[in-house]
Image 1: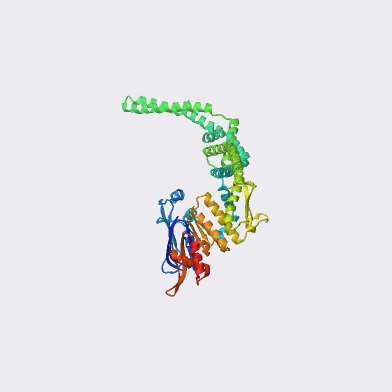
Image 2: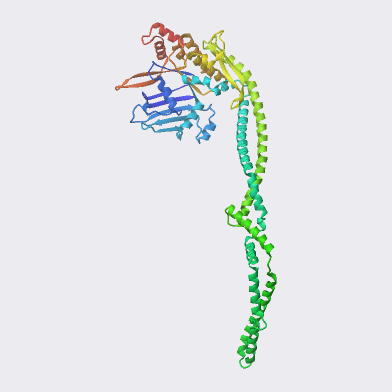
Length: 550
């Protein structure tokens, strides 16, 4: 419920405060008095784009503030998502400066314009001539027909299943593209992997192979050097060992004269033994060194393949090639895993497909029954609104594919006169008829759903007299279920209101300003009489006004 709205420094309004009550409230006034300013202020409050030209005095800011009783609105999720305190009486404020800066608040907490719009969606339904375009909007047709469903959970179940299927279709498409890309590269990847696997890299020691290659490539030189060294050490005539023996003998001969010389003999003995062991090792190694062309060819072939792959893959070591081999093997395995996962996803998608199909069929079945109930209910309101011969029909037909609302299309067919064939509503209904059709629909929905505050901007456009009175009665009936505000120029409608405000324009200090004030009963009689007969209120008009109020 909208409890109050306060407007400061906006358009022609210096300051206005409206305290509102439950039921039907009429806002009246002469053409051009500024009734539309109220609608503009509400639009700004609910997130519409601000125009600095609408600020009355540039030296102060424009402020629009409203309080709402939101106890009956399902706003817990909204407050939680925007980190706002939940308060039964919620205050919404919008401030706009002459420089074009705008600030918005809900319960004194700054919020974005998107948050204001979202809040407004929950609490206020503003119906203007522009909103008659809802007739052409697909979602509105489903909203109306589904309001007559006995199973209120069916559409929610369908929406969830449809969204799940949509996500799964996206996942399948993405994974299929990934799988196809992997398969496209699979042959080359397998070829690379086989090249690496043939080298048995895990058991290949590049340094050892290169050392063995060098040894085999220079086996003759190595053997020659070994033999020369061995001969130089142990030659019977001129070997190093023979010379050491002779040196020891010389020292031993004179050691009796100088015992200190024995230490040199001992050191020579140690050198002799070390060199003798070295000579034996050299002889053993000579036996091991031999020319092996076949082994050399094998090593050269292995190293050539290794160097080729290192150059091909732009790496330096065997470990780098092993890492590449592991990566290729993982990708090959991944291709197998993605194929398995894709099959699982496709199976899930098939189940979702079946679920969506079943729920869409159930929705269509319900809608065929609900459409008949909706037509009857709307036509009942047609009669109340002076469209006694009008008929409306909802043609439910299968759609070419499932969509967000089900597996069917809903066409609105309308005829305003007896004997005239039903045709598309948007093509055959006049402006005045469209307004009443929309009012009948809103009245129907008000009986079926909990609607927010409904604000009607000149719903009576294009009608007068008896039809206006019927519209007023319908609005009165609707207001028993909801708070309803209507901007009207018809006394027949304003007379049905529980409360009435008058918008007037006059000159203050050489400037035109708009004021809004609540009317008491006598003032309402005078205002209604003026709406009936103009400024010169006749006794008949006054009597008619009293009758309307009663």
